Image (cartoon, rainbow, N blue to C red; front, top):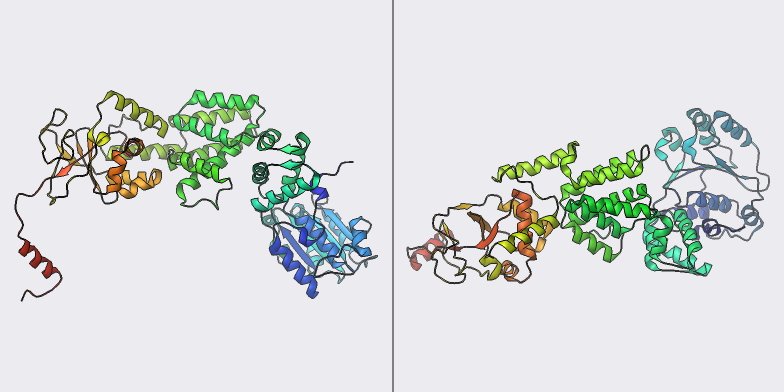
Length: 556
């Protein structure tokens, strides 16, 4: 009979345990010094090596020729334990033996000495499943067992154990195994088994197993049955997964408000036998990664993915507001809870439609998101009937259409820096056809009747750009902006900003317009302005004297 990979490659000594060195080193040192405790508690996620370490410890304490705290694997005791011929190693499934009577039977057995080993070891798996009465019956025996008895308790839910049990055990917390360790182990086993696997496929399996080696090897078994050369596509097909590209595509449809496109994509995935519950979970993970990519400067250690996938996440996160990301996580998490009790496809489609059209969502988080946008629009005087675009892609398309209909302003053609002059209180608009000259005669598109007002929301616009286009935001630090009709006049002397505006690529100009849409709910045409020279001449000598006074230097 074929032996599953997770059984075939179960570690037989502490050196073979992957990713739990902080535990195996302590256990080996205790065995070397002879300081063996009477009760151990192993806790952690499933498939991380708790039961394996318990069996290795049971073998090591009975080994006749222990080597540096590890079992030799060659003595009669080690071989008998490996073959299951020793009655002194007792494994108890607490899920099947939850009652008081089971623990009472155990209490009677511990009084008997081992038949052929130094210690009788009781391994109680899933110990949190014991009843309260069973825990109470176990307490005294667990605290003061006979000298020849060792208890090893294993659980995935340590919070369910009474404090009285926890205080009587030496506790070891098993960690989720790292992506690199699992991927390396998968490739090693594939080589030993005579088939090949792409590094990207091994990394994908490692991500899917959520830090558990047993789940990873079970998935590898399935993939090996499909192909002797395992690729990323094989993993997706075997696990009925959508993959990050489908999650990104669905996210783009949601950002654009494209309900038809999103439902068509779901239908395509459903026909390809993709598990919609798993897809919903993947979408939550995708939005979580977008949140990290948008808010953390270096998200490499927080997002488990390839370098190429990380770049794609960072690019997509720039076009989606953080409020939309957080709301999507909440909506999808609620959907995931409901999918277990109702039609999964219907629930998932309802969640996606709600995300595409936020006005359909009356949850507190969605209402707060919409109120926040409305407050910004009212604060900066935008008409409340104007709805800010939900998606950056839609705003970009709208801006492109508007530019096609309207003549381009000077900032979009020859945006030149103003000549540095002495600043006065009131800025003077530079005519769009005379950028870079000293003349300021009004043109057909600019009349003297237009009133120039300070744009109070400019600081918020820069804050928005800080999240979407940090390089552009840095170049705008210290700048100001004014409104003249439907034109936003930007006062900035940073040369990098001027190079952005004069470039042939409209990306940076569109980013400013998108930020304006997000903050005030409308877009403006962009233009520079030039400050007016003061008519009064300044006496250089008086200026020097004034500077000396500020430095407290006497004039004589």
